[in-house]
Length: 423
Image 1 (cartoon, helix red, strand yellow):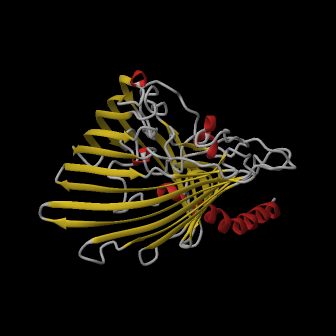
Image 2 (cartoon, one colour; image 1 turned 180 degrees about the vertical axis):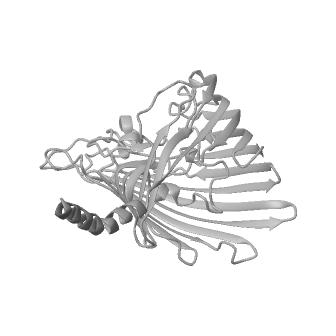
């Protein structure tokens, strides 16, 4: 018996360091967070090229970008740790329930070297301006979002989660991309970089459609090093076999034959859609408040190989915007003006194309009052002015009768009152 006690005692003595180590092992911190952003809005579209196509006012409660999520972080050392996040849409209006983890969600490793993760995440192109002095004064959401013009070629394009499913048309460059493999660098002397790749899981069975997405951004922010704050960024994104021209060239628009996603192994129909954008902003802190002014310039190109004669082979359009935000105490004034040119079109076979009156502009004005850092009430007005043939629409949110269904030449407008609470 004494021998057994000795053996047990010796075993416990040997295991003691392991047990203590296990008890002292770092544990993940878990945070529940969310943003409930709801506004009562009236939207309409007037001035259509064909008057009968005008859309009368619709009144709706919009919950765009409302979300709730769980975020976990585990630090083992300065060089290694873990990150995990599951974020879900919070449709507090009771319409359109969504699946869990359908918004920015990921798992990966992090450290002083940056963060490497897999998941479903906003691309660097989409987020390049977020949090900088060149950011959208309206917070990149709902009908007042910059996506009404920027990152859209028009043609009733709305933002959406990016699907790599074969033969699926993807036209917007405001994307949350599935099957993401991403790296976000730390900030070094004001510089930061983001890289993103969406895998080709849904390459078609015959192998001649191979949808992939590549995105990257480089940003710089002076922080507090100068009397004024300065930000600058550049971003690039490319969609392989995204078939954006299917939306742009539908029903033979610009050509005599509609663009399509057809093709064969012998004659593959590949597309390459590319976005390039640059932005800069400056912030002034004075006794009269904090003023931020920013601008963005963007070039979008949609192109396909092996287009049949008479079909749209290439479409390009450039756009720019300027934004202004002034905050003093709890008050915040916001304004943004954006312009898209008419674009240029190339038809397979050399037929003439005409893009006259496909341009558009957008004006957004707003006021916000912050009761605290977490609760704000706001008013806004937004209007897109389309030329006779253009169909730029509210890229995010909006009543379905207007947003994504704007008649040619119509001018979508919206105004509303909203409340935003973050926790």
